[in-house]
Image (cartoon, rainbow, N blue to C red; front, side, top):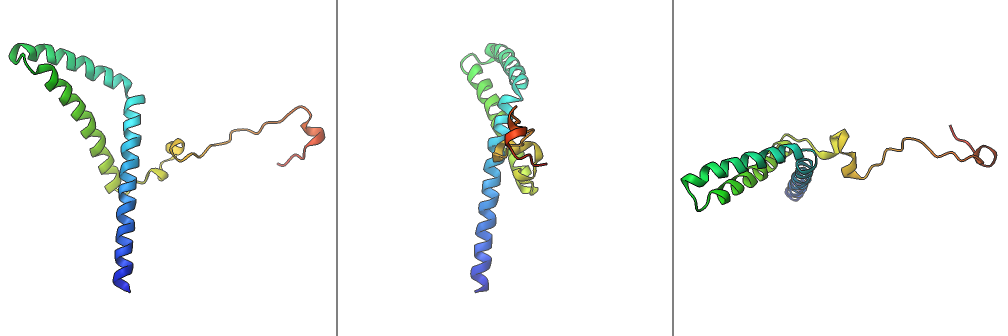
Length: 124
């Protein structure tokens, strides 16, 4: 009985870790694309200059090497950051600025119509 319960808890914990890792991977990839757009432009500029320089050394695959390296660098940065956050135990639901990920809407103010003081019950 005890062995079955500990095995079930291990499976639940591993599924929670995988779910957290996938959510962090998605969130960091979206943040890199949206918020990190100037960084992506800077990396593309450096990549173009690097491929021009490497073109004289190895003319066949300079562009492919630089483009593949930049793409792999971005993917590895997202995966490593998601792994570090997951193994530190930080779950995305604990982060306050990720409320858009959970579908929680913060209601700033309630709508009050002109006829409402006469016809509605005001709750304060």
